[in-house]
Length: 55
Image (cartoon, rainbow, N blue to C red; front, side, top):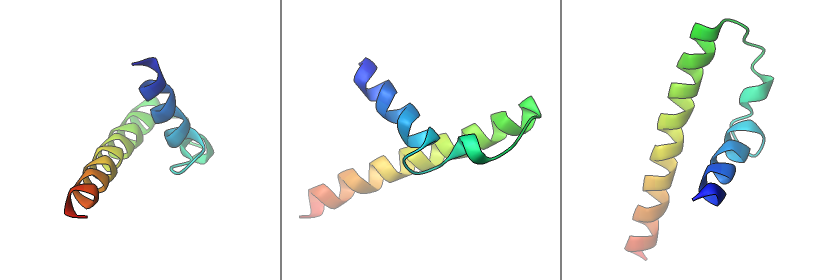
Protein backbone atom coordinates (compact mmCIF):
# COMPACT_ATOMS: atom_id res chain seq x y z
CA UNK A 1 0.00 0.00 0.00
CA UNK A 2 2.82 2.43 0.77
CA UNK A 3 4.09 2.31 -2.82
CA UNK A 4 0.75 3.71 -3.99
CA UNK A 5 0.91 6.56 -1.52
CA UNK A 6 4.51 7.34 -2.49
CA UNK A 7 3.49 7.39 -6.15
CA UNK A 8 0.60 9.74 -5.35
CA UNK A 9 2.84 12.15 -3.44
CA UNK A 10 5.52 12.15 -6.12
CA UNK A 11 2.89 12.85 -8.80
CA UNK A 12 1.39 15.66 -6.76
CA UNK A 13 4.74 17.20 -5.89
CA UNK A 14 6.95 16.85 -8.93
CA UNK A 15 5.89 14.59 -11.76
CA UNK A 16 2.82 16.39 -12.94
CA UNK A 17 0.93 18.75 -10.70
CA UNK A 18 3.91 20.65 -9.16
CA UNK A 19 1.93 21.71 -6.10
CA UNK A 20 5.17 22.61 -4.32
CA UNK A 21 5.66 25.47 -6.80
CA UNK A 22 2.29 27.09 -6.08
CA UNK A 23 3.72 29.53 -3.55
CA UNK A 24 0.60 29.34 -1.42
CA UNK A 25 1.04 30.12 2.28
CA UNK A 26 -2.55 30.26 3.55
CA UNK A 27 -3.56 26.80 4.87
CA UNK A 28 -7.11 27.22 3.59
CA UNK A 29 -5.92 27.85 0.03
CA UNK A 30 -3.45 24.97 0.18
CA UNK A 31 -6.26 22.73 1.37
CA UNK A 32 -8.48 23.76 -1.54
CA UNK A 33 -5.65 23.23 -4.00
CA UNK A 34 -4.97 19.75 -2.64
CA UNK A 35 -8.65 18.83 -2.92
CA UNK A 36 -8.68 19.95 -6.56
CA UNK A 37 -5.45 18.06 -7.28
CA UNK A 38 -6.79 14.92 -5.59
CA UNK A 39 -9.96 15.04 -7.69
CA UNK A 40 -7.93 15.58 -10.87
CA UNK A 41 -5.68 12.65 -9.90
CA UNK A 42 -8.68 10.37 -9.35
CA UNK A 43 -10.08 11.47 -12.72
CA UNK A 44 -6.78 10.69 -14.46
CA UNK A 45 -6.69 7.21 -12.88
CA UNK A 46 -10.26 6.62 -14.01
CA UNK A 47 -9.49 7.71 -17.58
CA UNK A 48 -6.43 5.47 -17.67
CA UNK A 49 -8.46 2.46 -16.54
CA UNK A 50 -11.19 3.32 -19.04
CA UNK A 51 -8.66 3.53 -21.88
CA UNK A 52 -7.19 0.16 -20.92
CA UNK A 53 -10.63 -1.44 -20.95
CA UNK A 54 -11.42 0.01 -24.39
CA UNK A 55 -8.34 -1.48 -26.05
